[in-house]
Length: 73
Image 1 (cartoon, rainbow, N blue to C red):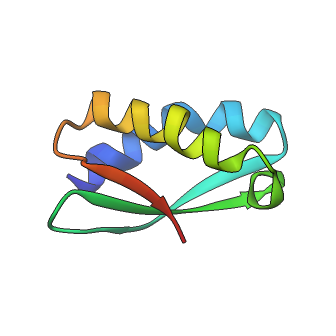
Image 2: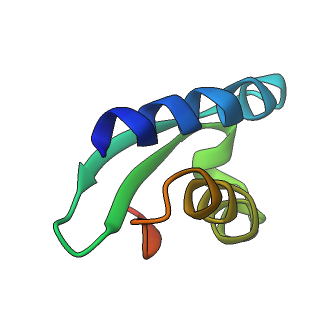
Image 3: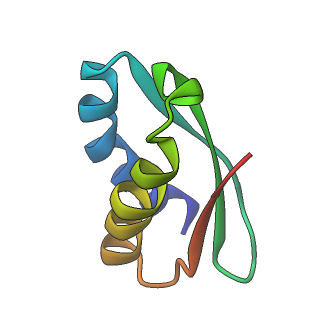
């Protein structure tokens, strides 16, 4: 599952990098909770929660159905 999550994040990454940010996979829990770290411009952006939930979480759930939620650490 972790490898499929990384592949999905690689699809998202160019969009984040275009705005000066990035995302790093920190952990994948057995319960389907994915922990990521937003880096660069995304780390301090006031819209980061929206990016996390409406962007990253939505795409990860679509690509990897076992994902239940995505949290920033």
